[in-house]
Length: 251
Image 1 (cartoon, one colour):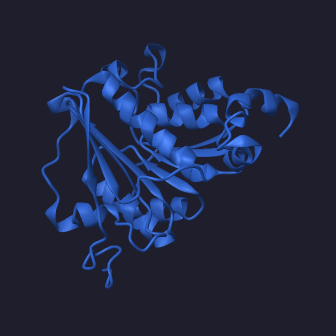
Image 2 (cartoon, rainbow, N blue to C red; image 1 turned 135 degrees about the vertical axis):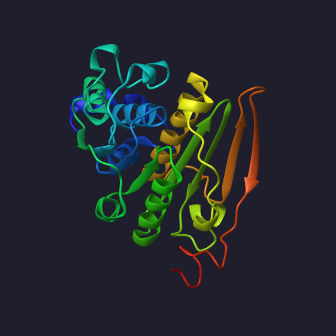
């Protein structure tokens, strides 16, 4: 690190758990953020400000006025722009030293297999089960940890899937592909604005811990947040031997 970086990241360096070595690991890391909306906004901004050296952001959508209530990477002046372009502008305004790559496209299976092969962590900030399963399959195939978050109405959830560890389940262990629940979206169900910030910020925290090798990950633990009472519930998760993705006989 040069003197500018030592100053910029000084509050990280002061942390006994992180220090110079941990910050250097962040600077040398590559993170993939799938989705640049309510969850992806705080994730992308905090990964960039924290000094993750290379960040790839994938999203097919454009900024809409209805996004601005909760998607803090975007502004009124950028309505109509691709979300990835808007997010990149916001990230570089915070930290011009990081490399931000963007892909304005739906995160399909082929693209994800190629992208995930070259990153150290994936943060799933998308809003549909098909993409979540595609992201999960790519992460299992390349043994890359996946930080997953979701929010609807006043409810949030957060976990990490890390199949580098034999006991850790994958997304398909919890949500089998052939038993997908009915899709629910913010456009029809609503969402409390700060709640995506809470879950997204914790996703960023978990990703930074994984990249820096700090603390205990959420692998095998699902955190559920009830925003009405601000109460957390934790569920323990186990890998399912018959899982079609990470089980003994994957499809």
